[in-house]
Length: 134
Image 1 (cartoon, rainbow, N blue to C red):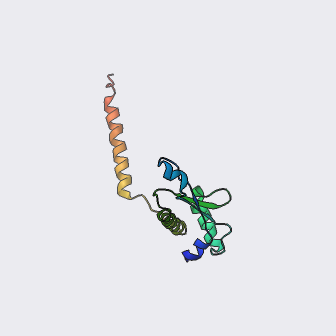
Image 2 (tube, rainbow, N blue to C red):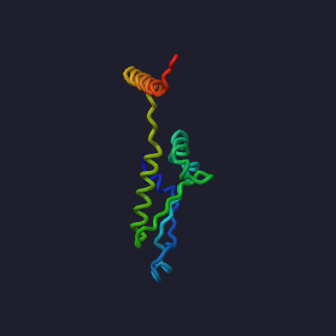
Image 3 (cartoon, rainbow, N blue to C red):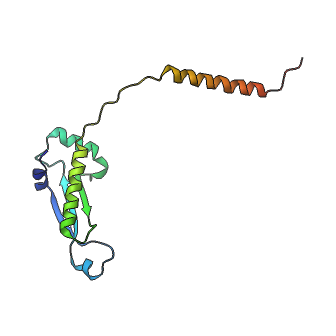
């Protein structure tokens, strides 16, 4: 996967950070917002797009846009680098194909142990009954 081409398709905006910081935070745009539209990507093939739309479903907007924000540091450059790193991680994790589940059987020993426990508890309960005197 060529991330340089993917990054060219991203829209990166700088906005003012929220929170405390006084005068500095009110006049400097350090928060970075990275937007990537999965549906309109020319770098990704249809299979990759479908995989990303499925795996990143909870992080995408209704239009299929991945939005990442970073305003952790006071440096715009550091925030941009962190946002790009998160973008790369999200895309690589999203493109991983899930492993197929192998069906397994319940071992005989486990079944036998369960049945023995059932028998033991039923005997316990039978022993709690009052004896039948006839």
